[in-house]
Length: 452
Image (cartoon, rainbow, N blue to C red):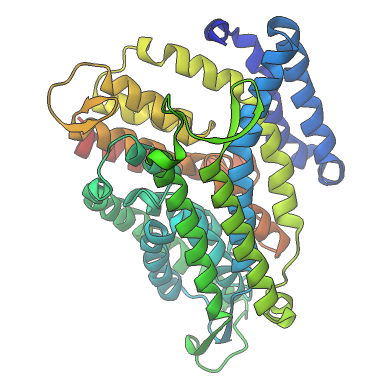
């Protein structure tokens, strides 16, 4: 597959077309889009697959598509599915209503929780409680937007558990607790964004109150009871499965004589590694046990349906397939971009992580940094990387996944679940207006304060 290094840029057109469809079709043909998303995904996927097969051959095409579906998409969607199922069996009962103070306080807890159980785990666990406690409010879409900013993205920067790029760094020699060095950057950004959120939410809250809206409770924030709390055991199982999938490939028992990971051979060089199989089995077992041990009435109170996970599964298989040319071009030319300063790494990693999978993007720039010949810094299997540069790459990959709905796994899921529960979320471009207005200024400050 060496000839793929010369892959033409025009093969990226289907990826751009699919992103444009996701952005535009809900605005101009919402009913058609809701019913025919699989058709649109199939169209753009075929529009990539056929020219790719014509240029490189059927075998290479099959190998390329299977590689991304088996080793990227499958573990991605199984993880999302497992957490979606388990979190759907946890609900909050009682007199608990969203207000600026309560929302802000829970954002602090949720953001920090993301580094403990991952951004996906924290998002799936908290998205329904946030929607439920603010259900009485009319103006609430900004709450879920900041939810994506903080809980679904930034909060995952402190540990390899928090976000997949950091897990890949850990697998390549970055110390497990190294990313705690990003704590001061996270707190800095949280202070800025939560201050902005508080005043935006207070303004919206006062307008809702002035219109006579109020929660049907006597004392907001009291008499709270969490139902289905035992499901946290299954959340822990899923988190443990993710950690195992990152650690097992480095053990000799899971390696062939040539150092490759043992697994189930699919086609050519495509192999589903045994660590991934173990991860999938544990996650599916956790989801099964969660449903078997939780009463159906909990899911009914949560308004649990399969719509959100179905939409994400359909859209993201198309995204994973059609984005392959863009990732290949980036991998082949990343070292030639002339990016060798921390602030350049921050913006390059972040900008591409906003639209591509942030894990391979992180690895491209980590590899690039390791090959620059630095003699000091964090020692990895890819070479020594200066601390400030590694901080820039890590923050770019984790933070800027919040720039678009497709920048990180839980973003679109949170949007889907919000839409499904009556929260009018902005369109693809509408969301980007929020990220450009609220996040990009923060990232500029980050660059000036931490990465110059």
